[in-house]
Length: 324
Image (cartoon, rainbow, N blue to C red; front, side, top):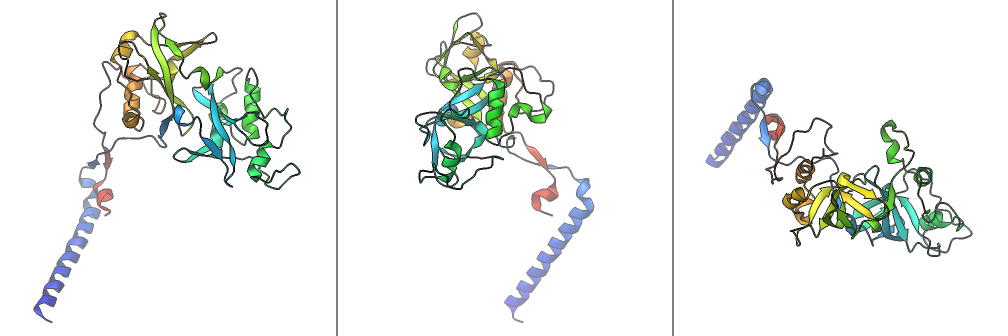
């Protein structure tokens, strides 16, 4: 054995001794040492909100490559703060009639790419007499008579019709989850009534104009209204919790806040704020609202303007950090 080989053997022996010793040490004294911390902001599972304007105008495709239609509008459930339906236009075989499907019947599969999600719906892909040589999924969804209740939007949307649409498309109505009872009525209206609408304060003064609203992609909840033209802040967008909105009459929208709160509210920057649940929670507390994605515990009062906070660390045992 030459000198180099002897050195390698010695180094290898030392390495094995250290590795075995550290493993025994961690096993014997794991509970004797404090936990370490690793930085990183807490994010709710599936937190991935987006602006509604990034949904309008996109096409919904099928798993077999067909185009079901173009998203032209949304039906907003003000009662539950959700997007209830996605309204499709330019639907094949339907002669200009729109197709309203549950929000959960679409899945975001890429940037600006939405795919039809059949849920528990039994989609028959066999070719029928009315099949036009296109996509079998499209045929299955558009083969009903023109007077079918599954096409178009009724002048007044009631809970029974909405429940029937959810059942037809194989989706569980969100208002019955957790054993909830169906409401007797819902406040429902199309999104075009929101986009660009003027918003008032409780006293009647102008609060601004609705520039957009932010949707939680995981369940269709509406997180924020985004206001423009706020008094004294002509170039700044301001996000307010959707739950502050109320609708009076046909086209009178009101936000339950004050001119002073809007004047001091943090500006909304889509590029930096949409991905931060910490920032979103601060905005909710600033406006006196409990963030719906947190546990329903007593909320401490919030005073002042929301600040950018450092990421809250979470804890890991030393052995989890290093794999011992």
